[in-house]
Length: 357
Image: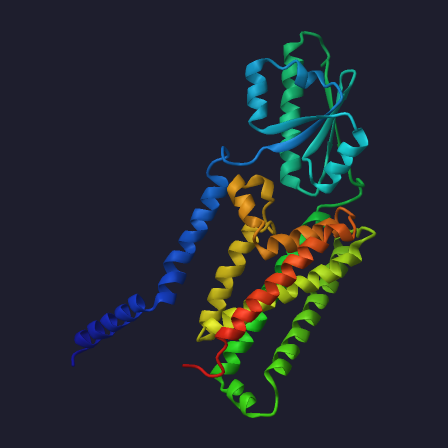
């Protein structure tokens, strides 16, 4: 066989192998395309994004006296609700239930916002700044008649790390839970270690329990490292109820370990397990609020995030670490995460294989 013929045959064989390998086709074509679609849906059009909820405390002439066309344009961006309870409005802003609260004293417009969602805070401040500038242009007096006073509802000493840490910590726990369980399971099956364990007196429950203990220990270690680095190097300040993040973090670790066990049960090679784990975790990180605030997504996509375990983990950790909420903020996320762990864990047990096909 000549060199040219051999090259052609080898090329043809590899081409057929590529086409027949569904995993390879997925990771090289479908997976990148999926990210293009996701980012296109998030950033391609703002018309589908949900409006930011803003409370109007008392009379705010800047809102009440807007011409019809200008008010219509404002309503496309924010949803204004009248409230008389100032303290209640500020508390809702602090908890993230409202994007901002606006009140007006004389010619000073005061905007109360939360830095927990920096994108939403910047959007509200931009809208209010334009309104104030427009009102000043409409008034012939000099100097400017109206002024904007933007005030954070949190301690002004808080830094951006205060609000980035919960999402990144939740994502890290999800990554370790899925990858750790999936890769160990596949590698042990490939090396026939699982087969030897099956023939030994060690029970399956013992194997799973030991993996669970490792998963929980790694989650606690991640939390300790994240908090230590944040406090020592970036000025992270924990709320009084920060320790409530421990139980929800452990519940999240169990939920993502169950995903890892299911991934390991379905995968034949470490490469396949790694790819499938990435397929699960990366879109969930974007859609679950680890990287982007849910308020900046289309409404249907934000609703989808409510069904993702990472979304519940993000929400629970943020509630106790950033907003200072109590047990009432985490019981529902913990219940969802533990229920998810049980259901997916049972499915993984049903599909579990001791030996490679």
